[in-house]
Amino acid sequence: MSRTEPFEPLRASEIRRQLSTGVLWSLDEIYVFPELESTNAWALQHGVCGDVCVADQQTAGRGRRGREWQSPAGMNVYLSVRWCFKPVPEHLPLLSLVTGLAVADALEDCAIHGHGLKWPNDVYYDGKKLGGILLEAVGSLEDVVIGIGLNVNMLPASGAAIDQPWTSLQQIRGEPVERHALIVAILQRLIPRLKAFPRLDMTQFQHDWQHRDLLQGREVLAHSGTETLRGLASGVDNRGQLRITLHDGLIKNLSSADVSVRLGM
Ligand SMILES: O=C(O)CCCC[C@@H]1SC[C@@H]2NC(=O)N[C@@H]21
Image (cartoon, rainbow, N blue to C red; front, top):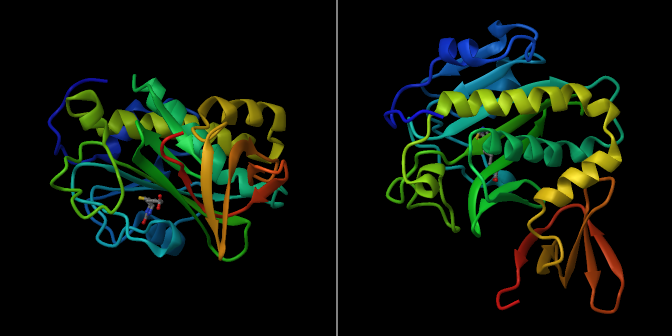
């Protein structure tokens, strides 16, 4: 990936130029905006199946669990893809994990190494959050929006409001990272995975997930509703639920939880 000025505005023409033919059905499906409230919101309201929406800035970026996603101008990647599944595959809950795998692969393609995935869908580097994924359904589960946020050239001052340890690709690499190539890499990894998703090979998925899973074999604390569980993270099941082996040997599968790795382990 070549070095570039950090605040070069994103251009649809450049994404189209770099994208291998055949990844999207039509290059008209890429929409790039200087500013949006949220690429997910735009894709939900205005997109059709297969549309890709990218913004240079989000004024109301959405994170998981109703949190805000800090989305300053010109620095990061804010990208949403609207996708339809007919019929809805039984393993739809795996979609956000599969998206995480695509993002992790795309980072490797851009010569970024050492990152991993924290269940269910955070991209982490050295114990700090690098990116997140937010899936929203349009109405029925047949029609979903897959939102990806990646901290690319954000420096500490711009992310001062973020309430958890975070990092960005520029902080990792020590130089600005070109965003067009990164967006193209994400699309080139994600779209084939979306097309193949209805026929997901579960063995391959489990293998890919284990390769990226940062929690595997770690002692974790999981807060789920009013329950707090402590145990060993033992991968995910075929519905994407986190498996935790409790100290008495019992295995619990969690579909949603805030998970932290216990310090001192
Ligand atoms: O909380 C998380 O970890 C998920 C963050 C997802 C942020 C992305 S940025 C692009 C898309 N548009 C949004 O408003 N949110 C997602």
